[in-house]
Length: 113
Length: 113
Image 1 (cartoon, rainbow over the protein chains, first blue to last red):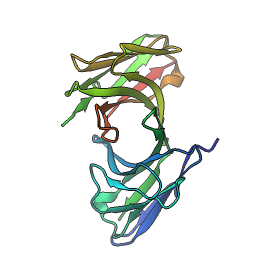
Image 2 (tube, chains in turn red, purple):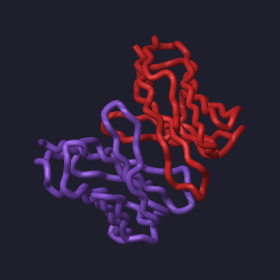
Image 3 (spheres, rainbow over the protein chains, first blue to last red):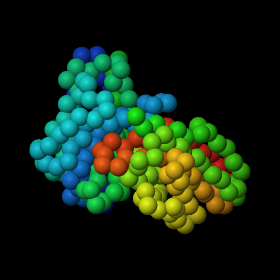
Image 4 (cartoon, chains in turn orange, red):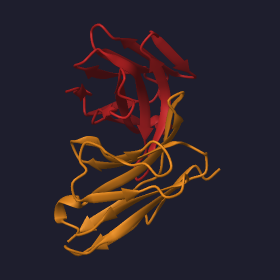
């Protein structure tokens, strides 16, 4: 069972560079999420999707874009990376409104220098 | 705005001890509350989920209780083991706001052999 898979696991970027984080789930889940986790601040929702072709803003969406072209994939893009985006990024998925258990990926460590 | 607090931030106990982790939230209009475990360098693993209509949930040595009116939940771990060492987070989902889950910052537990 792969569950929720994130790539890459580690990345160092220079300020101004762009990159994309890929999240893939093999559980046929409708809902997918991108969170960032920072010391002392807990997990904060960046963007989410309630189904293929849909995206919506979360709590801290600025500086990020997302796409959900296929149901199993949810991409998080940084167009022009900033040091404030240094964080650990987690993707998560959930079956739907009736399926309350949320499954997380193992995280992507991003450092912007 | 919902605020979720977990105190203490860190806890160290000898092996075999029973312990209680606390989670408090400011808005009692919740749909459910979920407890997660996070190991270093890993994602979050769901432990227990309590619906707003429930008072407690049990899984093995874990028991989670919920008191909506007082805005509190506790996670009880019986006969702690070194393998229980991890960070424990609680997350609250509001009524009608399926995406607006608020996470606590976690309690880092160390069980000493």
